[in-house]
Image (tube, rainbow, N blue to C red):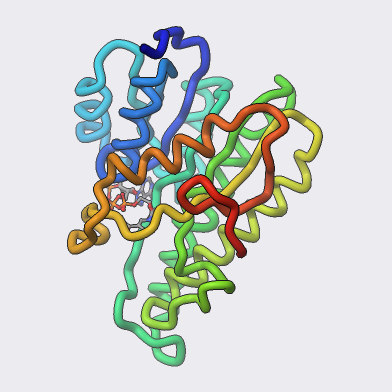
Length: 230
Ligand SMILES: NC(=O)c1ccc[n+]([C@@H]2O[C@H](COP(=O)([O-])OP(=O)(O)OC[C@H]3O[C@@H](n4cnc5c(N)ncnc54)[C@H](OP(=O)(O)O)[C@@H]3O)[C@@H](O)[C@H]2O)c1
């Protein structure tokens, strides 16, 4: 049985539901102190309470500078950051016609949100000489997979998130901090209710990247624990 040490802290964004809640639950079961971030105070507090001792909630809207700053002040240094919060607004749109307001709203959460939260917490990891950052990405952001013209804003946002992953990994090379992206596949959540894979199952892939041993790769894209092409 995993010893419950709670000596390391993991922050998960968008943790009130779906994949974020499943990852929080798994990391908590593996002995992390887990801080669940969510923009709805009531929902994220209830989610943290459902995990019990060793879990806490913080109000965190990743698209809002002041919210991220205030959360960073309250949470302090973390060892693991899972940038999970995401939005999918343009299913069925086409690249030549998707409203750019939708593109902006998508980039604001999926790219700038994850980048903003990373900027708030990554320097503390580097200073401490250890950390793991996981970007919850998607196959729709993969050039190797051909991107995803049926949801152009979402697809571009995840491709850009992959680029941010590589840039942060290069910047933090040899610091003890690993920054990687994960493609969880299609997962049955509010975002993809029709999917077969459960959030609990997919959470294992994210937890894998969040608990990599020292010397493991940084700046790579994982699918089911294997490194895949961008
Ligand atoms: N489901 C899939 O098939 C699939 C596949 C590949 C990648 N992903 C990625 O997995 C991640 C989790 O998605 P999910 O499937 O669990 O979907 P979900 O159930 O819709 O959950 C999305 C989470 O993100 C939060 N969120 C959205 N905007 C936010 C903001 N501005 N600040 C803070 N939190 C915000 C939501 O909060 P509210 O509850 O307040 O809206 C919710 O907690 C996303 O990054 C998604 O792109 C999902």
